[in-house]
Length: 263
Image (cartoon, rainbow, N blue to C red; front, side, top):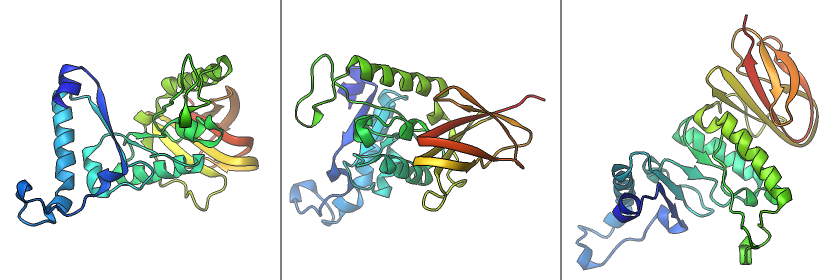
């Protein structure tokens, strides 16, 4: 850790592997355990040492913890400052894990949607950006990847899409906002909905294969809000607390920015 961050100047660590959640009892006498179970009970102390050492070398260091497609062991969560979707099998898992980990770690916890190539169609940026997650990609350039990374070449067509989403992400920077997980139930509300508050603005994300009906904008404050579809740049009118249900028609996703109207 001292060499990687302190000497080489890397800005973080990605700790990756299913083995990080737990270990077996240790019977090696050279390790001087009082009893074999100490290795199990003190695993989180090891990760605390890793985290504290990294942050001492660089107070801004990112220490990402990814248990490779498995659930997180809650006792390790205090010693990471970025958690990814951990090899999701669908876009729904990206969003579900985001909601769950924000509930465990806090509204402003840094959650990453994992490589966009793992989402539906390999290009569902909306499921990461809309819920206030950190974006990532593992495209290859200038040559095609091999094995499981094949077909990830950054073609001109793909680059245009990647660039648009990266610009939206950078402009809104929703990971710095507060995820309002209590406003919507991911199992019962239709369409699926998420909300993020950043400064005085609210950002809503709705998801469905196709939707033609209404959506509810919960959590609005006093006064009127100007609504914008911030992916397509379309004005959607205004809404208030008492008139927060608006008509909506979309395929796959709808991203709305609600900005207070100055009196």
